[in-house]
Image 1 (cartoon, rainbow, N blue to C red):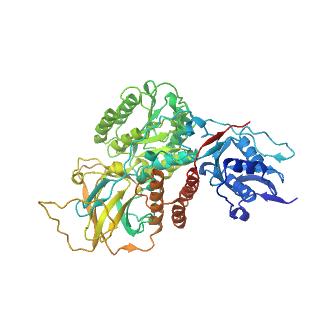
Image 2: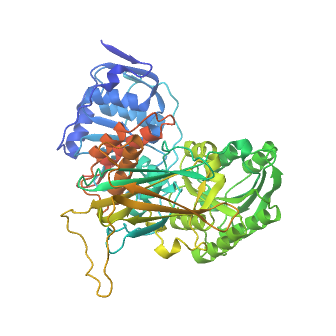
Length: 635
């Protein structure tokens, strides 16, 4: 009997997996039931994705794990001649997993049981066949042995009242008649981690949950540090547009100045925590506690922390406490329990009151709101809440928002509150994301280096026929807003990077687009210039009300045949977002092209975020292109 022992990454795992097309549901199930494992498999403490790669190799069926559980360490021993169904059943039972089957692609997707819920998934899993292996008959101890104790199964919520603001893609604008584009920067990242939560739970996200700019700006890019007095640097690049080869793509990148922890001003932070009944689930309040404990560990003696909670009513759990008293702060966090309705408006008012009473001049005064976004008691309308937050913003008390959970996420409301509060909005779907937002990007999350940052781009009609801003639909401004210092815009934190793309149709293109009739009383005069466009940036220092302006131009000859890693990877993310949104401007986009582009621009990727992105793209393509959905119950 031939044995295969796996204790770490094996070279043989890299063998190409065999896939077949055109299989019917019964054929794929039959292959699982009758297909034999050709060699004994014995693994101990091996990543799930490696085990599945081996099973794929032996079965001829492609088996993939979603990124959330790909590195889960598993133990498995299965005898020669046992079936693939038996092997998967052991994994499902002992690790609380479930599977989805894509018949057309002859592919099985392995998911965490935490997210599996038929009622929640039914509307979004178009074209997928689901199979619950969790109650299938167990094999004999002689045939199969597993070195693990069963994991607890936490079913997902069985309702979906999530809310997303309708997003309409930016249209192409004629450079001759509308040469100016103005928008506010955006450093939010919530859309990306929320999208990842959907993929990990076995479905594609709602179209309006995907905001292209937040997807792009989730990643850091190798932009240079600013020099001189500017709080951020600007990097530009021109290259071919991956999804429309006849078009050009212009990248604009801003990089905020890095600030060391010891150089940061003192912080007056008020944690405003939702402890209503809807926060009781494992991926809400328990995860929230973990996240805030990470943040507390970054606090210094000169910093102070207060905690306000709200449910049926709002109250103070922790009076202002020095950041050095970490045990006291963490004990207050540990005592939090969920229950009651959601007096969100009352909680915000109390949090701002505490922040104002303990205001630190020249410091960082901020309310950090953590919630699933469900405000249903008290001051609850978006208009009332945003006006309250705008008033406090003028007093230099800012607001950041952390979203948690699934099933009733009010994404539209949380994004609006953070925007009006001169803060950022992040969605925390797991402990690693909490670490990214509150530890790795601690300075950017909490310390503003420039506020009301606006960009205005003027296109040269001699070089550009038409253009469109890729993403930033919720951030588009009137051109007159650019010089208006009273107009609110996005804020940049220490070390943050912001990336934006313009898709350009070159002058002289035969492509037919929307046109505007010639004006009767005005005639455009084109200046003879080789410049492609000019970029203007306005920003204010955190404690000032008057903006500073600087400009930079891009020459039409600046284009590159092969873009930088920054350019290519960011373009891959933008293309992926357009596919998820089913954008009318997605052109020739495909998952295969996105993967090729992203893999070629992965770079050093020390934190593994780009590798995870590649896995998300690989999984996404198997949630599409099937004809029907069938639910198969275990006998």
